[in-house]
Image: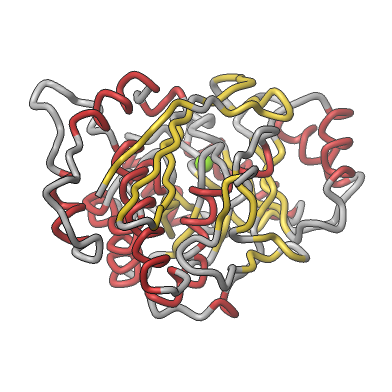
Length: 346
Ligand code: MG
């Protein structure tokens, strides 16, 4: 098997602001794994707060040698080799780089077997629910404009909160939309009592779920809030990989799984199993990504209670077409082998 990769910075359609930072570009590396004339695609997307960069991803990928593996279907062997390839000195753990390999390898396997990945995972595409479309923090006028732009295309909106103008932001959305809302505070609320008061108000405004209300390490606060909140509390920044699912029992109602955080589809599937064993809800999210990684996450959409798979819709230079589609607000899976994506111009 042969691995190729190149940096491909993603351009955002709008400057994106969440509690903590603003940006107009996201670093990204595209990869391809080929075997006997068949190619699978993968991607590493690196939002700044996760500690990986184009340099670190390329350095990790330069150490990956797939030439000893002559059967791509032995995914367990290949992925465990990749999972344990960190430098002893390296504390970033290279999860986005590992996710890129995991995604490309799964795509390759699906293409070789002639089946979409969701079918190889034994899932039913009819079970996919609505995905949210994310509205970043902005002025009321811009927020109303963004909501109007996507009217009729989405069944749920996700609103970034966690700043002093939260209520004004929600009220401006309510002037132009009555869709169910989810909110993501991105750790922006600091006291559990104030968070609970805010959640009660949000519930009265038609909000159905709250993501990461408190700082990621405040497990005592999160436990207190989970015991009292009338809305499900889903943790994102507190969760990275499978071990966190066990650690966070009782501190939330559910977890937000992202391929770039956990290292790809294989660990994501394990996290879903662990969450189910502990009666936790499952959300599938994404970073700002191309259709490649978003479609990879969507292969697990039939397992999820909440979907936030809009990362490819926020960029203006998506190099892929095909893959999963959002139809009348719902994630709709492709029938083509692997991820069913095609590089534009090929
Ligand atoms: Mg989040």
